[in-house]
View (cartoon, helix red, strand yellow):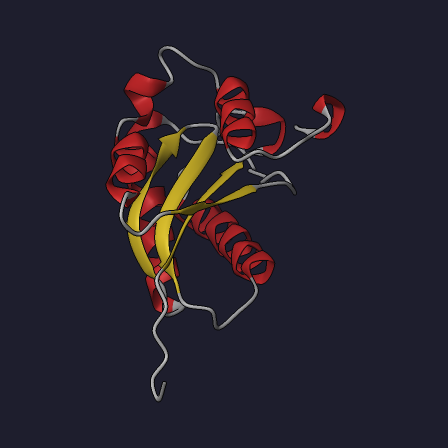
Length: 150
């Protein structure tokens, strides 16, 4: 095959240290827009960015040009700088070291997109801890509770 074709849709979830709600609700759209712009600037395509004041979800088309861990490190560092420079948070923010990457079927990614769009409603019924446990279990992964959150 002369050309390269990829369709890698990923859903990443990451949170602030100790699941603190650093970003006021009214400032979340600014953070989400910045993260989408940052993903796109690196050659990927942001499909949906959302979350709550204590964590973020990003659904995007991944172009395999850089390691996922490096991409997330860059996003965390850059978004910390953005939050500080624009004063989106009254506090100094820190992201947790951990994260969750989940692959999403290219035929069924609209469910993940709607899930991210409806985070406010979703989290009225489920905590972020319960959400992450469920996502890990649905992916068939094992984990140790003591190391799930920092």
